[in-house]
Image 1 (cartoon, rainbow, N blue to C red):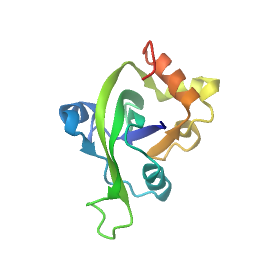
Image 2 (cartoon, rainbow, N blue to C red; image 1 turned 45 degrees about the vertical axis):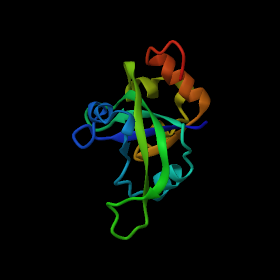
Image 3 (cartoon, rainbow, N blue to C red; image 1 turned 120 degrees about the horizontal axis):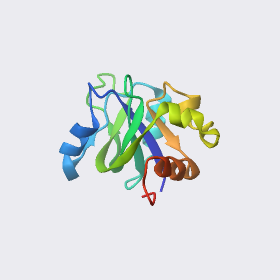
Length: 141
């Protein structure tokens, strides 16, 4: 299993909207960065990701699971980019802010810090466990 971080502007697509989609999940469309697209190509069903509210909130608020692997993005008229489908798994009991991530030396190499504009990024198993702990999860899923 691999771990990821999905960034979304809450005014465009929020954690609450993701939760309302239930088990059918929602496609993660609109990505127009080749590195982020390649990250989605590497995803497998069952991989987990942090759901991050960008812009004003700047915090990890939930955990999602990949339920459909990479396929063409219907919003891309040139058909260069794809998308995956994700479902909400659980909220993070105590949202983890960008400031908290930046303040933790063990997370200095996390793409959220190093490549802040990347909308879909990998998370190492050690980073995953630490952020889950910071978010109040007794056991990382």
